[in-house]
Length: 308
Image 1 (cartoon, rainbow, N blue to C red):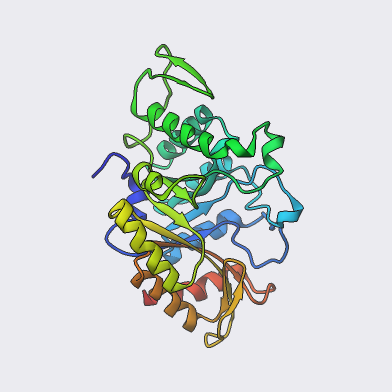
Image 2 (cartoon, rainbow, N blue to C red):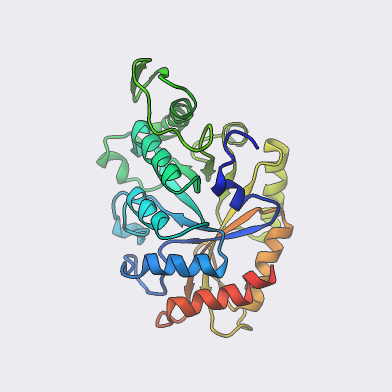
C-alpha cells in the first residue's frame, strides 16, 4: 500500500471497476435541488451497492451557470453523511483550491478522513465559474499557479510535523503543526479536468485523474494517453444520466451524458470499463421528474450495477 491509499481509495480503485453517485440525489427539475431527504437517500445508495458518494464544491450560486450543486457546504455535508453511513467512499468532485486557503482545506479534509475512518478521497479543481474569482479576491489568471501551490502546501502539511514552508498563502516557520493528520501519510488527490496543468504534471503530482463525459472511443484514446503518462494511476469518468422507466429506451444526448433506458446504459457503462475507466461517477436523475428517487436508484442498481 502506498502513502495515499486510504480506505476510501481502496474502495474506489481496488481490483474491480466501481461506480459512484453524485449529490444531489434528486429527480426534480431546476438548479436548486430539494434538500430534505439527501441523507436518507445516501443510506439507500450505500445499501444498493454504489461504491462512492460524491460531494461538490459550489461556494456561490450563479444563476447563469444553472447549477447550485448540492447546496450544502461540502465539509459540513461530508461530516453529516459520514456519520450516517458505514462503508461507502466519500469523495469530493471537486474542492476548488484557488478559492480556499490550503490550511483550512488540509484541516477540514484530514478531520473528515479521521471521522469517517479513512473514507475520504479528495477531488480537487481550479474552478470554472468566472464571477466567483473576484468575489474571493482572486485573479482567475492565477488559478493554475495557485492550484499547484496549494497541492504542494497540502502535501507538506499532511506529511510533515511542524513544517517549514513559504508560499503566497502564508509562511510556516516550524513552530506550528497541523492536526489532525489523515489516516494515511497523505490524502489521495484526484485532479479534475486539466486544472490549468499539463497532463505530465497531473500524472506526476496527482493520485488519479477525473475527466468529463466523452464518446467511448475518445475515452479509450484518452485513457491510453493517460496510462502512457501516469502508469496505472486511476482514471475517473463523469457521466450524467436521465433514466427512463422503459429499459429499452434509446439514448439521447444531454449535458455531460445521456437520457436512456437501462439496456443501453448498462452497455455504455460496460464499454467505459472496457475502455480502461476505473470508476464512473453518476449523476442520475430521471426522464420523468415526478418519479421517486428511491425507485430510480433501485432500477439503476438492479438493471445496471447488477450486470457489471
